[in-house]
Image (cartoon, rainbow, N blue to C red; front, side, top):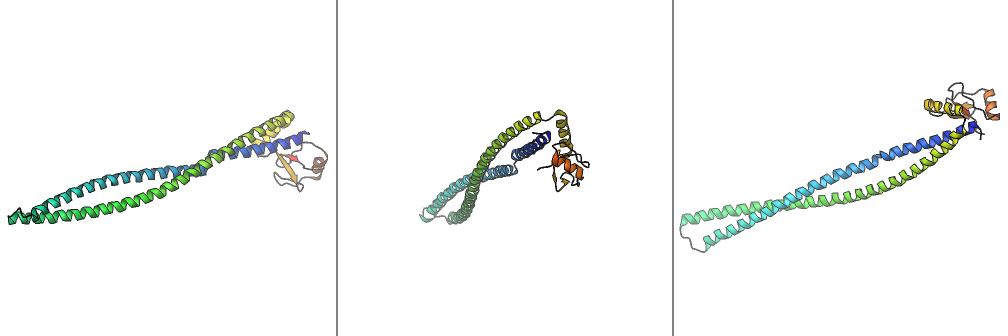
Length: 236
């Protein structure tokens, strides 16, 4: 294979390797994985917060139920004293009657508070259940995505090894001066070797003189574009 063909093939493998490395970088910094990971963290924090609120509400509910039982017991004691006729003093009876009304009011208020608490807890449980379901689905998606990216990553790394091997083989077959020139052009121009398309240099779009086109068509020689200095390649 002539040096020009070797350089053309080398550039194709270099371009492929560059694309693979860009894909590997994208996978390493995958926005979708990061986005899902952030959502998982945010959702987990929200679930923990809801769980803490439910625990606090549960404690308050237990406490209020205990207070309600005490008030019920107190009311029964007052009503027993009032209605069994053991107390004859009118002032004491009047006091007990007022205390009975006060306890009944406390019981009613406590019952309303307990009912409100139970409604709030029911709402929190429903919210927790909905978020937890979404969290589980998100975790499944995240796990699946990690697996898929891992497979892609491994395939790309294997492909990168193959391309590097081809690049080494091709580089060893190219003359030292031609290879150095190729590296310099690739570093400064991006593509060192450019195809001639419609009698133009595809690197800078300059129309090529006829004598250069004839040389490219009939001889495998390294010719540089007079305008951009890239190596010209005529693909027969």
